[in-house]
Length: 407
Image 1 (tube, rainbow, N blue to C red):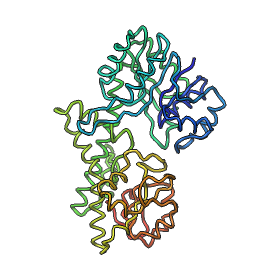
Image 2: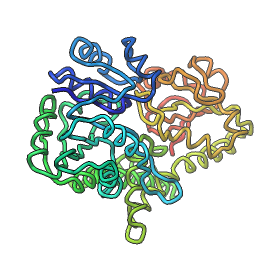
Image 3: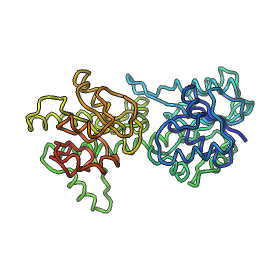
Image 4: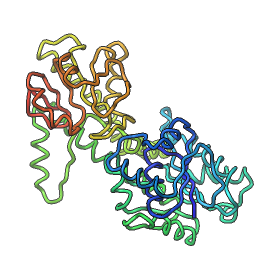
């Protein structure tokens, strides 16, 4: 058996490698020729715990990388699914494009597995019509399946192997066949259901997390206005056996939690209330951080924005993923002029993403008076002593050195 994995990004690449290291012959396809060339030169394209080791192991197995679609019996589509900012609905253009290319290449009776996170009903509304346009008869010429990923950057390799999975299929037979395929490496429970339920469960999982994060973030604003320590409030409240409040932060990033809930808002605008409110709270958290910064600058009589440094460009700790990063959101809110004056440093981001981005931590610190800690990278924890003469706005509750302010 050989599968063609379409899209070799944050999800597609580790998925392809995992299959390859568990006895499945894999051809990985991506339209980005530079990315394919990098992989063919024996290098991974992003930072992830255990990924390099998995890559080296996969190269000794049956795996190839190309920019061409293959003539195969099984395809896994793992391409981005952004949302339209105007109406919050899913933008399925990448999935549709990938599906069309698959249909131009596949064998009759092929199984097309969509791993990309999609809103409930996406396959019905956008993918089935494409099959019809191309003259494909479902359950005969092509079999549709939705198998959403359920992994988190920073722990992808482990979670790919150990997390449970959901397989949505039109027929039980195809669902069980795909379940057997994923069972080649997945040690977690694999549940077979219908496609629309599989679509909904993935979006619901990320929406649940978004709502819980929003509660903590809103609580931080309430406590700030009331003059209370939100971390102490949460610590005590969590002593209750049925309470487990998360920690507040500077905002929500990444391609899952910050995006997927909007799909439900866009599709059901008249009945979605809590989900929309949570999204607005979390999207507003970077602005709240900026308001704290202004208050701290006023208190310390610092007027020059160029004395401010932001530590952390990525959306979470110990990864190089900057998608929907709260730091980038803050810089956007600041406007071009002010954003160009602020210094930025992140040990995990080697290429220049923003203006005034430093690649030496000591040089970064030497040029700022205020440090906004946006990320709890291991690096900052190991170098905390270097902040002792700085004013620190700690959005992650990890600093105990310097003149520290919390959100």
